[in-house]
Image 1 (cartoon, rainbow, N blue to C red):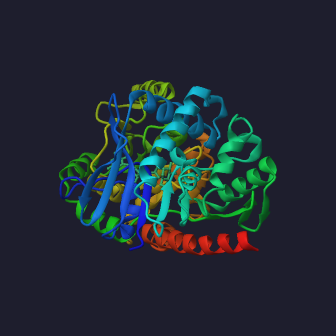
Image 2: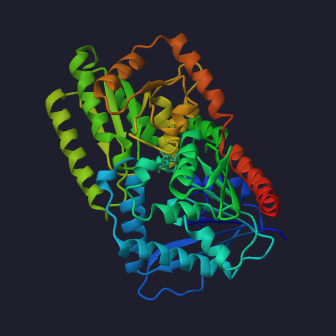
Image 3: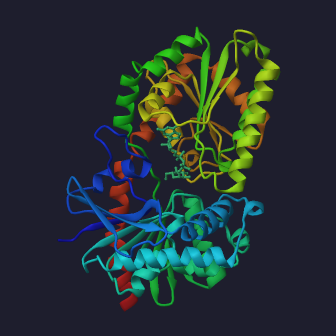
Amino acid sequence: MARVVIVSNRVPIPKARGASAGGLAVALRDLLKPGTMWFGWSGRQVSEPSPQPALVEARGVTYATIDLSSEDYRGFYVGFANGALWPLLHFRIGLMRFGRKEYDGYLSVNRRFAGALGAMLQPDDTVWAHDYHLIPLGRMLRDCGFQGPLGFFLHIPFAPPSMMEALPVARELIADFCAYDLVGFQTEEHARDFRDCAQRMLGATVQGEWIRLNGRSTRAFACPIGIDAEAFSRDAVRAVNDKVVQRLAGSLTGRALAIGVDRMDYSKGLPQRFEAYACLLEKHPEHHRRVHLLQICPRSREEVDEYRKLRSELDRLAGRINGRFSEFDWTPLRYSTRAAPRMTLAGLYRIARVGVVTPLRDGMNLVAKEFVAAQSDEDPGVLVLSRFAGAAHEMREALIVNPFDPDAIADAMHQALTMPTPERRERHQALKEKVFRTTAQAYSQRFMEALGQAKIQSVLRAAA
Ligand code: GDG
């Protein structure tokens, strides 16, 4: 039987009943029919990893994982994927740390993935690999003899040729993308930057969305990811009864809540957001004692230096803002570096008057979509959204800001806090319609259909 095989760095093996699923598991839920396989890293570091994957079966889906050694982890994950690719593709060349050793580690882990997965693949399987950790995997699976449909989706942005040139191995990586039949990006801008790189850096022939390189054809297109809007909206209504949400709502005593929810990452524009909030309080004293900003930012990737530095910077800024503006019965900024349960998050979005989503650069940004899905139709909150989030390409009815401009973010927050109800409703309806149209379900279905067609096309083009 033809199977779908999903490959990602981490594998969301279902835990206890009721445990909530992460972003990718939600996005791909419709594909997880009996017979599907999901392959990737177990999250474990061991001294001698076995080449044989461990298999877990849940609701007819096989989850296959391999372990990594700590040396693999340092080179592949900390070194190349998060130390070089992540900053480069988020336009932070100055933070990029490239080393041959780390790149070799990245290739060697991808080779290990390809070896373990290749041995389990059947000729009529369809493989869909995810994200920047696994760019060379497709070529390596082809080297193992797999000839079936191969798709890849990049969750983060892509960069134009002038920036990609900074990465010494950019040409190899761009060629690796071209081993797939279909490559998906969050926005047309990212897809176009990729096609430009293939054309200008490798001399590939580009025709519309198709790239031809060394006799192979690959389609590079935009396929924006979404959320399960129905389910999230239902959760938000129920979550208003959640204990933490009720406690927080009670503590507001009529004040407005602005909310930010982000992994603690330098791409999310958190220091600029804190500066913007200080700027709002300075320019508009009428908001003193009338607003709280709740910033939830669970710590992430603390093995990478830059993330530890960011944490100290945010601690310092939060202390400065509260030290400067607090009154004995009002703390303007509430800041937590712990993750909130998903249900609590849904309820917090719902009671918030403003959602502040101001990344400096972001593939899509699902928080923007979750915030909209959680709002009530009668009394909706307002979304302040960075123009550099992929989500801004579609969500034009948000208050769109330049995240590098704290003054502009402050003005948008003021506009959101004072926006009349009819305008809030009108903007919300338009945004809601989009979030309920470009859903997780629509995303996975569109990608899989395009992958089937791309495979046929690439075979026909090769024969022509
Ligand atoms: C990458 C791309 C792209 C956050 N804090 C908590 C929590 N979250 C959840 C949010 C949201 C998810 O994490 C974050 O998604 P984003 O899209 O904002 O960002 P990345 O993690 O950077 O994801 C991004 C995405 O892939 C999908 O393609 O949109 O551009 O960078 O769902 O709600 N969840 C819980 N507690 C928290 O404290 N439960």
